[in-house]
Length: 356
Image (cartoon, rainbow, N blue to C red):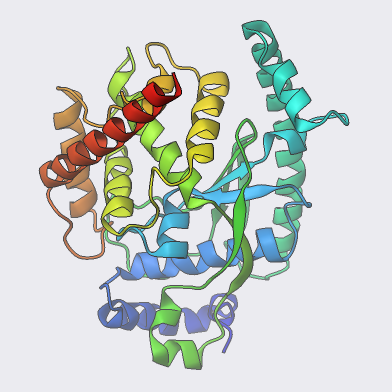
């Protein structure tokens, strides 16, 4: 039976609720039923985006925590948002080669500002068109309560009728959030087949027709880890301390990628240079020098009081059931990341001195 038929027929929703409850008990990682349900919609949305062409042929990379979780099982937490990066050059009007367009739009602060303003308008126009396509496609399901909500040029929410029993955790946000960006890279990527957590339970894989996203373009992991490393560097060195809410996951994700050896952070120097160049040009933050991250002065360990605040955020994530099982204490994660910081800095310092 098609999983979505349970949603179409309200009399079958109690059966679906029982399925989610049973699946939570049988899932190898003990994933909560509310997350098993939400993942069905995350996977189906990825299928619509990439397999059915709702992205209109743009070079778009699926990245972030959800990509790490669904593509590589790199992290043992439920990541419920869909983070999508449209390759910046694909959004430009005109036929200038990418290298020429990059040089022109980054040659000065005024040109960079002009680019950001124009790109914001282009993204808004594109996202509004995407929203209408998505809305029409969701209407075709014939499921009451399934709808898209346009928030702004970078965010579209998808609401679905929640059947699974709720835990009351504030860390679980109801709708699936699609987040778009058009100032970053949307490549290199690798095509990947992504399935649901429910399909990991054999009896439901055999009994139900579950969504499969066949050709999702996932961002190269060398770029993912450096986007995350430079994000930590930003949080730790910014003149204005960031709000700790929902930030602890970034430290956890990097630690998991290192522990599971998903990618060697020093194995792709092109990725390092590309990410640092992009962040320096497009994402400048007061007090943050991204170039230090590539020359042996990467900072991954926050000072107080941010360190304590992030540790508390981590506790709230654990209590909110966002992890599969019990993760290591945040202090242990920071100890490992301190070693990671030292290893990366020593290598890149030697490399930068060799070049000079």
